[in-house]
Image (tube, rainbow, N blue to C red; front, top):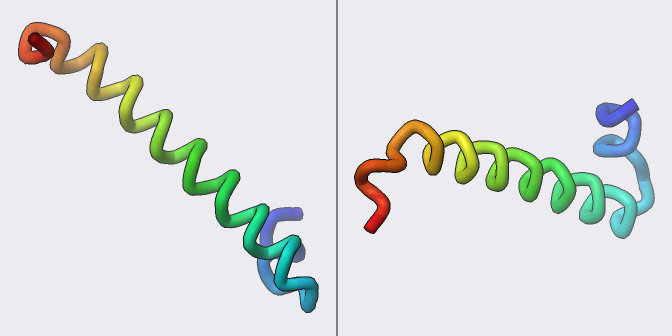
Length: 42
């Protein structure tokens, strides 16, 4: 599903899909590192 959207001819759809993927990865890493490195967050 995602691959079909990324190779879509519609540039707008491609940008939206990439943005959603980027945000999911970014927030996932942020939350994980927050819980893993909680003692370093001051």
